[in-house]
Length: 210
Ligand code: B12
Image (cartoon, rainbow, N blue to C red):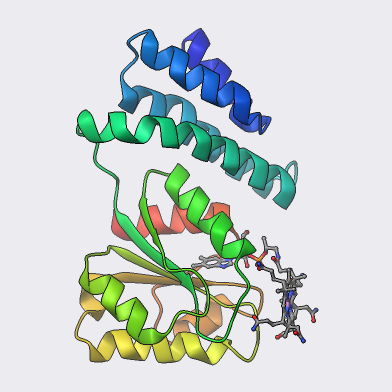
């Protein structure tokens, strides 16, 4: 990795948004390819953040500031990526299910998925099954459902049922997560996978569409 890209990579690990912004601008000015900046600096750094989280070196706050720094870099890169024809690895529709207003974990998952190269459609919180179905109709590879309450957990099942009834189930992989959710529950309600945290959500989504 050259000096400028390494500086962006390190700045993401440190959650230093200003240095990421400066570094991305400087790399683009120096003629670095947007796809190279994305893959070598941004995505690799978020992979490293995920590993550090899994190893217990980083906790949620470090992950959040790193993801925000990565997002700042991505915002600058986005128009250049579109111009240079760098395709996202897939499209993820994500939301917190109806009745549930918790979004910190869901946002983190969205940011890690974005860091892994996915295009994200974030439907927000309190999302009805119909809204998920409508978003899938617009095109999606993966659907991410989040729930933090035991009372809203069954809504994940209703949402998957609604997707089945709409005839779109075969077009998407459904992943679920949130504190009251387990891998067992995912199997029970017919989801394709469960991840306990944002880092594993990104690996899971990549694995499911590969
Ligand atoms: C912050 C918080 C709130 C905030 C939410 C702010 C916000 N914008 O999100 C506020 C104050 C609004 C709130 C409200 C309520 N809360 Co609250 N809240 C929490 C708290 C303290 C932290 C949740 C959090 O953000 N964690 C940090 C994130 C990073 O972790 P995470 O959400 O688990 O997400 C990670 C994984 O689960 C996973 N993940 C999450 N989503 C997804 C999705 C996919 C697809 C995948 C693959 C993975 C994945 O990856 C994430 C990142 O690593 C929890 C306690 C706790 N320790 O969980 C209680 C908690 C969830 N709340 C609880 C309750 C009861 C409520 C209220 C009902 C309280 C009340 N009486 O009003 C209301 C409900 C409002 C509603 N309708 O939703 C209970 C739930 C109990 C239960 N078993 O149902 C908890 C567990 C607290 C407790 N111990 O009692 N809450």
